[in-house]
Length: 73
Image (cartoon, rainbow, N blue to C red; front, side, top):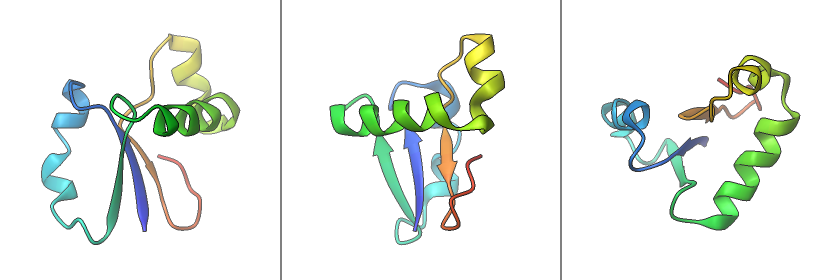
């Protein structure tokens, strides 16, 4: 299953709602509503090289897709 880290009020996250129509394929992890999801996302963002530009630019890094093979996009 693909994990998707989002926040309900994030304009970029709202744009991907159509992509998440097949809920059986995606596990939506709202970082704004669940502190555990936020902790999990921050650990990923702070340690994964895919977020280097995001960290340098001061952005959050959502929406974030973690594919079944562990690839982060």
